[in-house]
Image (cartoon, rainbow, N blue to C red; front, side):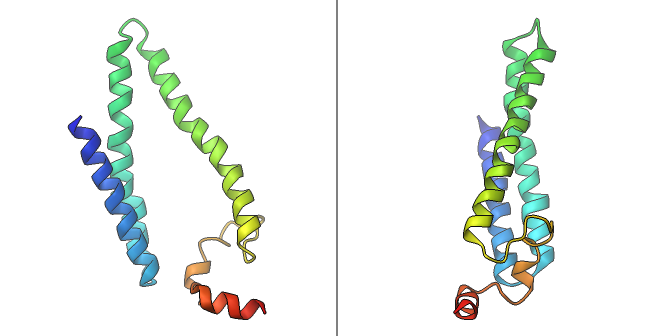
Length: 121
């Protein structure tokens, strides 16, 4: 139970540090927040249910681990096309053929909503 709170704390702190990095246009803060701190939280949160599944199914630990990993990857399988469709619909600067089109936007000078809305008219 304690691991869940620690994982949620790291994950939320990572998002806040990443948001601070976006707000201040500091790429290293985005990497530190989303990549390092949030990744630690995600890793801690991922290990807890997998180890619990192994304890629940001691006769088939490989199957339990495999199903947990399949569920984790299944979320990415669903979220990836969905995020591409939503970005295409709501972000006019998004180009699905260019992998850096999302990452380059906050540092290209077009990050403020007022600047992008005035340039479209």
